[in-house]
Image (cartoon, rainbow, N blue to C red; front, top):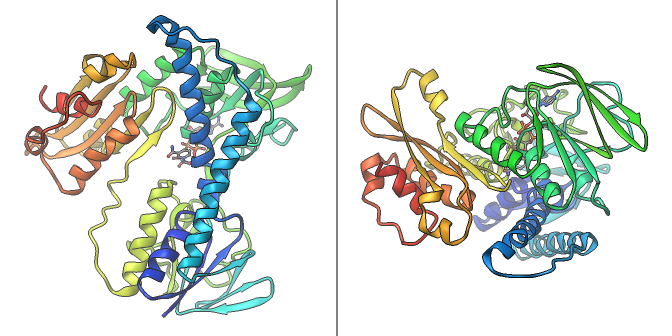
Length: 445
Ligand code: NAD
């Protein structure tokens, strides 16, 4: 068996490694650096910045906690370390692929048939093809969207200076993470969000509380703001928008466009092969197979939740299908996190989604301010909300907002995957004192 995988992000390269472990011959076509968007211009460099932002915020509170220090912030060094982290991890992937005897072909692949791809004029054939080419930043068709100084999440990670004034268009995951980071780095930050709330796809209580917390840190957030154009103004840029109160405008030095991402279909030639796709991405069945038998598509390219871990598990399902192995992966249970300060994380249904589906639910809530570890850490902003089905106590979802939420949510993801009930959760002994006890406190309300 031979598989050709197009794209070397967390979907493509992890699937390549897993396939090689199963004795399958793999050709991995890398259209960009190994590790894809996640490693090179997404999750990893952003989280490295987040770590610095946390250090800065911690130091700003240190004096009140009895530590006197005079912190100095050297952005060049921060950027240097961010790049070093990326290089270290990318070299690790290269070594892993080498160890597994995976053939890596650099270049953009184009499909020539159900079993053939072409890269720089050279044909490669395999029994199956997996497309994992990811996504690219979307933009708005408004005047001035292509002006210098209007940047994407890729370019903001390449800055050599911290902007004095940063305007973020889009109060989704990317927009809020960079708003939070650059506020800590010293920028004056304004977020313009089209929807009535930030993080429109998240739990409404969580979105409200996060907006308040970011506001307390001095980040200006305008929701229900329809951006109409960007123009040069003085030495910077002015973004015009229609707000609840009428027409308005805000000036900044840089504008981050963070209004979502679109599937990267570049050079694939999928239309000629008759592969079905929509504006959201390539259409696949529950095994991630396209309408052309033997061609699979995984990760951001199929739309939905554009998350690295979703891509990896899509790849695992596709591979299992190719190998005739069944699995119990549940794509309805994908935890998601927002690395703002405080962090937010969720898994499963929101209260609103359950109600819209006609499910009677009760919501159990606990607060980080009642958690001993959070109080010792002087990091008490946040809450935990668990959504439980009234009828039988089944756990349906969890929405967290507070320190280390992204780590804490894993427990509930595990429980949801095993179809646990509230009473199952209540009987799990949690270590004390830990932040994870917020889950148990909510369960015992
Ligand atoms: P998103 O969909 O999370 O947010 C885009 C936001 O832009 C939405 O709130 C939307 O209402 C808003 N918007 C759309 N048009 C607008 C307009 N004209 N004016 C103002 N606001 C407008 O998309 P994103 O933040 O760009 O992230 C892209 C993808 O990457 C998402 O799927 C996200 O989950 C993923 N991602 C995940 C992480 C993580 O796991 N921590 C981090 C970054 C990105």
